[in-house]
Image 1 (tube, rainbow, N blue to C red):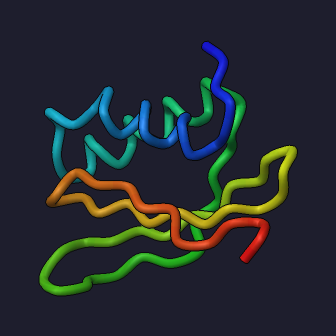
Image 2: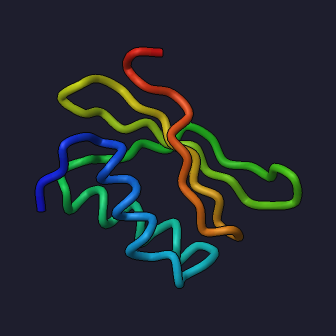
Image 3: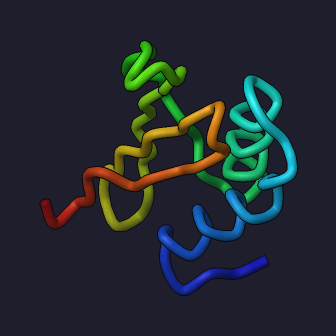
Length: 84
């Protein structure tokens, strides 16, 4: 599957697994990104507003992105881009 941008790949992975939650959601999103050629590296994990949050760095041809995976709400947010 081809995407025009890393953001599209993240949106696809998030939507593909939106019915999952917790650790299963996080693992499935990471597996999807890996299958698309994007390897993730854990930067930090912790609790934010009562929810488990994991931060990852992802290297792409465009540069380094940082994403935040919120386990309980099954959301992925890109919080740092190569341009930032």
